[in-house]
Length: 490
Image (cartoon, rainbow, N blue to C red):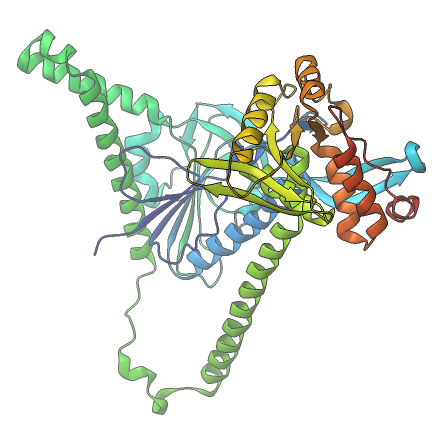
């Protein structure tokens, strides 16, 4: 039977297995062999702050990271306990600071200061074993401890491509591969208590070097067989072939380790008749019943967790007003407008597509366009598009008056709101004045919408609507959030 290999956060070109990202809720129980890389770069890419020299993640990313780490720790432990071989590639995978969700406040009113409480997060917390201290240091010189065991063939073939990026200080298990000096653990095989599987720790491979060497070997063979010109004309094909060969060789080595791991613990599968009631022991029946009850509880907890995650995602939609662009920003704007008392929805018909068409309680129609910029202010191009949309909307048979144009801008969206430069360029401001367009900073809209989501305040909502309706070619100034709400947050 073909072994099913699953790669988590590990990209192996030319391989057959299933690849999933670290940011995934995939189960590992369908796999026979798991290759896990604790690298969390996909989370760090969104970090816009640092703390003590390390990336500091925002609240949402921190929640996803810690939840996913718990998910993988549970999945890896279940995989090993159920007899699977799990390989952990010991990459650098730097630690970060994660938002705990807790806040400290000082000052009052406009002088109020909010401090985020963060804690250090180590990606290796996802590995279900006592590794000691993971020290991020890089090197090439390694040696075996004399008892490589099941790692012998792997190390013979791949030692020269292996580079350690971390070592384990205070590791309590039996190391198989250590640093040349200091004898720090960089490779080991662990068998958790009462487990039929194995957890294999390996220093990462320089796969590019292995592929390059294989490509050179293939090129030399091609040159010998068909001449220099033929070899030079097939560089791309040779590199692709080299990737496939190296991938197959690597997978073959993993399969050999898996085979050796199972050979060490191989037991005779119990025949089916052993499960008959005549042979069931009282303790066995009691434990089986408890396991069944635990499985039911786990299923219920997983379902509740998925529901809570869905509710959480819905509850923080408004936060997209602070940092998003594209569809997520448009969806948050629609939610905010509805909280303000408008009837808002996107418009899609034929070739016409408007980000937001919204109607005030008195029947006045408005048409909105949204734009998020990474590091710049919203420019005149988006205003021109809004003007075209207003004219196109007016041409529809059922429309008898021009809608009021509203441009929603989220400028420098990856910078904290208080540090951002002007949201709209000078040309955009002049163009808005000429056409009477209202300019809305989405960060301002967030403050108003957040208050209305938490408070049933029809007077404040009406004041916010008036601020948009009465803004004629200028930036909308929403009324200040009521002092009672500010005091409650302090």
